[in-house]
Length: 256
Image (cartoon, rainbow, N blue to C red; front, top):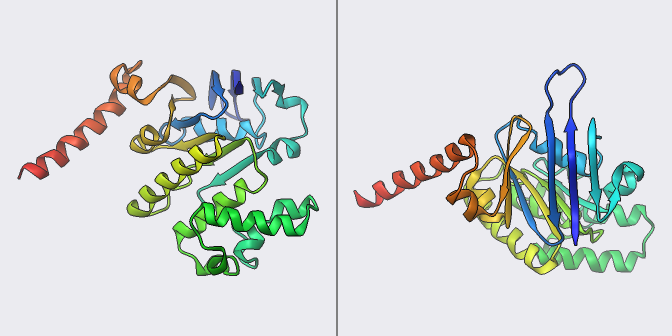
């Protein structure tokens, strides 16, 4: 089943002559892990924000599970998706468990069920609920806060998870560990994941398919192996070459 379909989607912000997102068309199937790769200003975050109607397209349509989202209340669209950002946005005066439980409490769901699910999700992101549920965000490391942010996004049991450079501000070792956790969670939940990153290694490691963007345009959308073997554009080829040069450096260090 097609989870997300972009149909000639464009975004041009007021005062700009150029498109920030330029006629992007793509289909994403349910259960895929899609990474959106590109440098700053390429349109990848704008595309993600249009997917949950934080921003509306200037032209084109976005269809989720067969429904044009322009016909749906933006709040309803957002509540159907999980959204994780780099800044996390945990409320400092609330405990971890309270932060995770915000949305279902607003929807007046059963308190006992909310608590049970919050504890289950903390365990899923490998934070012991007895240890961390009553802590405040200031008592957590950056990596632990990002795990809480992920649990909060999963709390409403959305079919689609949007992640905007969630590990960009985290140290290299913690970042690798969280990448592995995210792959494990994706395999367990079978949800559709879209993750924005400017890190080609992260994009290739996590994505079942990768969207490569530059200048607002979608240059290539394919599996990591196909992109590496058959880059469709000089920009994509340059990205692949940058990785090969890094590998040559590390291989040279090992040979010394």
